[in-house]
Length: 92
Image 1 (cartoon, rainbow, N blue to C red):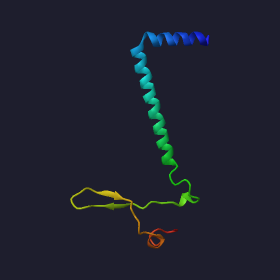
Image 2: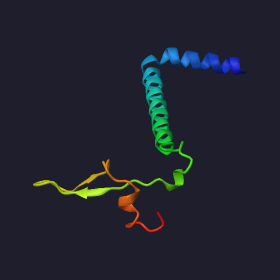
Image 3: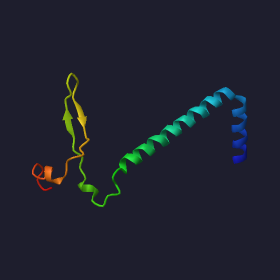
Image 4: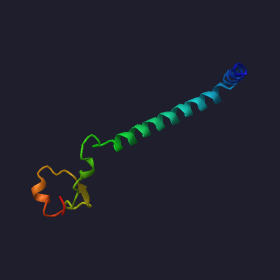
């Protein structure tokens, strides 16, 4: 029975070459996009997951307003450490 299904599928693929090519190409593109999205989501969810105290990690953001521009957000804090933030955030 499976052999008959394969015969019919191959016959239809050879009979309708253009239509089959478009369908197979669309399926391949859709599956590729799905895999790439899943890999991206997995990478984003695993960010900083290797830290032992990852539930205590925070990121500081600062709203920056350059001259003659719209508001922007910056997260490049290289000089901050616990001494600067301990009095601003209780429990740290």
